[in-house]
Length: 69
Image (cartoon, rainbow, N blue to C red):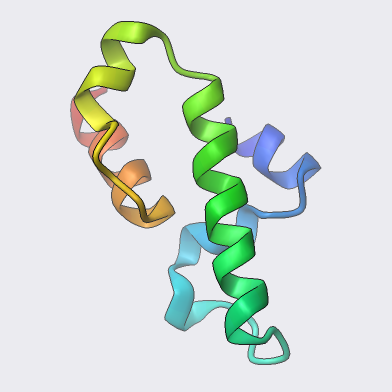
C-alpha cells in the first residue's frame, strides 16, 4: 500500500496534515489527503472497506487499518 502511495506522490500525507512540508498550500494538502484516501479505499476488499468506510483522513484510515491488521 505504501508503494502505491509513493507512486501516486501522496505518501507524505501519512505523517498527518500538520507534519507535511510547509511549502504545500492547504489546498494541496487537502487534495493529497483525498487522493491518498481514494487510493487506499480502491485497494480494499468489501469486508475491510466496511470497517473503515467512515474515515476521511488518511492518518485515521491508516491507523484503523493498522489496528485491525
